[in-house]
Amino acid sequence: MPVDLSAADALALRMTSLLLRPHPSTRPGTVAEVVEWFGAMQAQDLASGLWSLGARLPGHRMTDVQAALERREALRTWPMRGTVHLVPPADARWMLELTGVRSLAGVATRRAQLGLTEADADRAADVLGTALAGGGRLTRAQCLATLRAAGLGTDGQRGYHLLWYASVRGVTCVAPNVGTEQTFALLDEWAPTSHRLERDEALALLAHRYVRGHGPVTDREFAGWSGLTVTDARRGLAAADDALSTVRVDGTPMYVDAALADAPRPTLDDVLALPGFDEYLLGFRDRTLMLDPAHQAAVVPGNNGIFQATVVRAGRVVGVWKRKVGRTAVTVTIQPLTTLDVAARVRVEQALERYADFLGLPARFDWLT
Image (cartoon, rainbow, N blue to C red; front, side, top):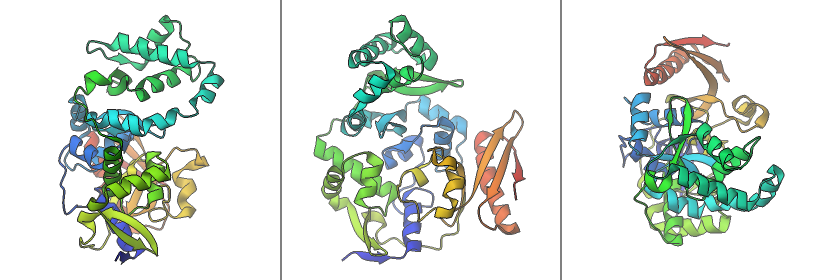
């Protein structure tokens, strides 16, 4: 019989699943362990992705996370929904084959709008594969120059489309930046050891990782996050059944990792400073547990898919923040979305000081109200 949970209990479980609170069954201490826990983590904005990892690895600085990515503890590619994620290197290929390929459906229309053909896209993948062979690593600008030298247009959005296509096809992946420049490498060379899974195995593993990293969640949340059809999402959840438990939140059946089903749920009063592109919000379509709909416009101005960094208290968004990184300090501007008394503001600044420590810089604060 499913356990009934209040919204507060569900939120406490979700924050634990997201590794934003101590978890009873895991204490990940490396970038590789955090990324494997989630299976895939939002990383379209690199700075945000680095802090998503840092926020879950106390004591790590940005240089530590960057060094881990250079050691290939995780890589970036487009495994689902046409969005860049951090994934375990050994899992990149089966994820691209399971979910990444779905973003290719209907791409002919977009390609036609760009004045490209399928032959152009396949040729671009071949050109990049040849240029990167032997351990090569090219910046984005160098990749585009290579494509142009081969007679392929890269103006407008053509270049982005061709780079994306080569990665979704499993030819390339996004390697760590060189300075501020994005780089690309061959997936086979960056991740020479790849897990090979049957389709049902892959569905089950992806379902379990999503639930353990985000639960309680519904089957439709899993479908939305993964880009799978609801039918395939349910198939994966059914295949992962032994590792999952079912709960009810306000009467709605949801899945949670079995290890958390009977875990104690202490009072939720944490204050966190999270990046905008974090699984905390982007891992869900229904964000009402964490975000008051009245604050949606402040978190996603213009509803354009660009998420602001958030201040979270007791699991709920209570403010947004921006940072300006200088040579000697990081200046953080904070905009509260709810009333915060003096004690609460002190805790917010303490949370943001942890981010400043991650950068290795002292923090300066500017409150808008």
